[in-house]
Length: 396
Image (cartoon, rainbow, N blue to C red; front, side, top):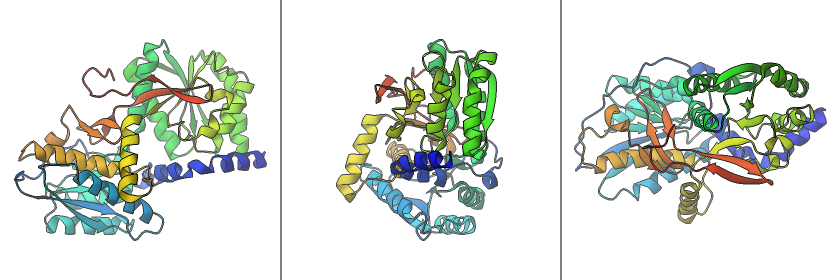
């Protein structure tokens, strides 16, 4: 069985770059803190003058230097699109260390930065935002950890809450009103479980069963084989899986659950993460007809092509977050607003156009992204419900 687990992990290795990206921006127990609701505050600017924007990235961190490079490249690519808005990008090295991130945030503000993009990791973002909160400077971090958001700290990374809400809303329109949650016994699994429960409550869906699984071959196998009885006794119409598509548990779950009686033709499989990044999963029986979300692919392809044209390489999956941050700041400055960098402006309801489609920052410091709902049919990704082009009438 361990050999099977190893083969599954090896088979998914081509998608490891996305798994690395998730790790860098992922949930972190040490960074879980309550900073309250995002404020409406921020510095006043002269939109007719050059606005200094600080980019905090881990340039000297060996494990993240390539990500730092691509984030900076993407930010500079966005600046080229801004037209009348004049942005001076100042880059600061955090070395991946919270204390250095805090020091560099203060240095950036002392040197004239009016807003900060980054840092990359949640714990560094928390320390950076605390350091400059008393000076009214907002921080747009690249983390996807919703628990750190609030006050002057906004997160740009896609959140479990956003994905769960999108899928729950879509499910209710398809007649799915009960769900069993299958989650891994780790921090991302717990965060995913919470997001699914909250989304279910908002969308009128009943969570009728919750089943954790240990991070071991035996644990995954035993849990997968028990899901048929759990689904049967609870009456769940769907099973919502929190595991990352690139995790070695996924092939086991998607093979063993159908073999054990959780028929995908009867029970709707739903994924909290993007399954399109792991085409090796497409042939597994549990993947057939499953639902998951994706960003606007036309927008994503356009960004990737532009990045390749400018830098001769594919961007890291997180690079688009820096582009999005600059695009949002630039759009507000271009409107001629002296309050362009305040929380009130950053959280405008209409949102912004980013590398994966429309997105907006929320008053609690988290974000909402326009997502498409996709499925696997005949081992191919098929869009069931396109990503909205705007938030008006998006329905979620």
